[in-house]
Amino acid sequence: MNNQHRHILLFDGLCNLCNGIVQFTIKRDPKAKFKFASLQSESGQSLLKQFGLPSDDFNSFVYIKGDRYFLKSSAGLHVLKELGGFWKAFYIFILIPRQLRDFIYNIIAKQRLLHKTNLAHQEQSFNIALKANKPQQCWFIHRPRGQRIDSMSGTDSCLCSEISHLHFS
Image (cartoon, rainbow, N blue to C red):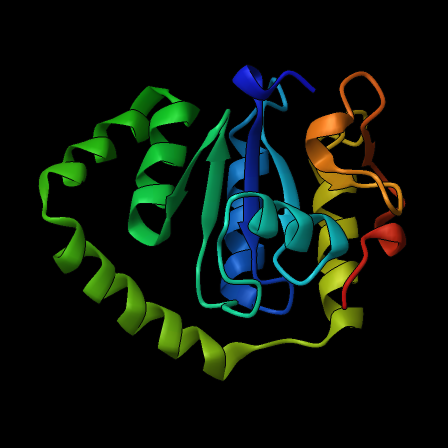
């Protein structure tokens, strides 16, 4: 995958709110620009390590765009900007200082912990989302064991209906 055109969202794979954000993005991404991996997955852990980010902080939402990354509220606003259309208008909130945006983000992140889900429910939700929306497109990245994400140009794989292959630690 050409790093310049890489759009990857890393999310907490056991969080209903995060699941909703993934489904929201999939529904509004007709060209399947975005790929997804849970923060807990082997692919997610590899990307966190590649960017020098903590591999044990699942309270963050990470958007990787090319060789850059955005965290928390900045990640969300940049994703909305990339979705275009009406959603692009929300990017105006980037003018609010990051510390204040992330303070609000952290309050929401703490509340989402009350709504964690189990893996079986999460897989079922992803399967429903994929079948209902765009089953012909792929969204989830999967790194073959032992292979770096950035070395996968032309050989990266994604998972369409086989969500059971999405690796969670």
